[in-house]
Each structure stands twice: as C-alpha cells, then as structure tokens.
View 1: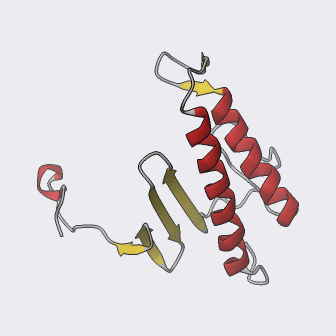
View 2: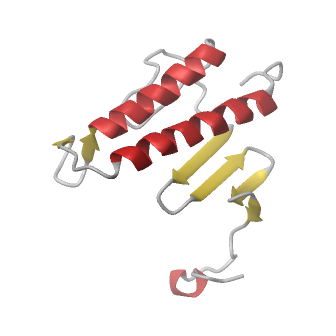
Length: 129
C-alpha cells in the first residue's frame, strides 16, 4: 500500500468484511457441506470457503479497486503484487476469536494486545504470560 492510502479506512472496511464473512461461516456451519480435495486428502475446500473468499475479494475491490488480494483459493491474478502484509485477520466466528495485526502497530486478540512469549522451547511457550 502506498503512503497515500488511508490504512485506517482499510482496517475498518476489512474488519467489517471479516465480520460479515464470520456470519456467513456461522450460518453455513449448521449444515453438512460437500468439499473438494485440492492438492491432497487434507487440503480441502468447501463452497463456504469459496463464498467467503469471494465476499472478501468483492468487498475489497468495491472499496479499493486499485488494491490487490492474495487469498487461499485464488488471488487478484495480476503481476506486481506487493507481498508485504499490511493488515492481517484471523477470525473464528464459532468461538468468537478474532486476531488482528497491522504492520508496525502490533497484534491483537479480541482487541487486546498480544505478543510473543520469548520462549525458545515450544513446550514452555503455551500459556506463557
């Protein structure tokens, strides 16, 4: 993103799209879904996966037509995508867990700042405050 981009606006739009996608996932979670194997037995994609990605891509294009999108199922397909992550979202709508990050501003879990534990051993890192 260039310096002329309103990153706060991007954050607001993306956060709203993530919430909308979460509602779609929660609704569709109530019913059985067919899936397709992508590259192997554990790399699966459902119609909900595709619908969520399309919702996000369409929403980003609607508000920011010049932005590129790299998704799990497909991307904007154009050369020259700047692969520096500016914003990141991970949302589990079933458990209401939302992780967000903004380059240079830190990472958050449900709005509360989080940080790495500093532990070198995986077994010592879980639950470390």
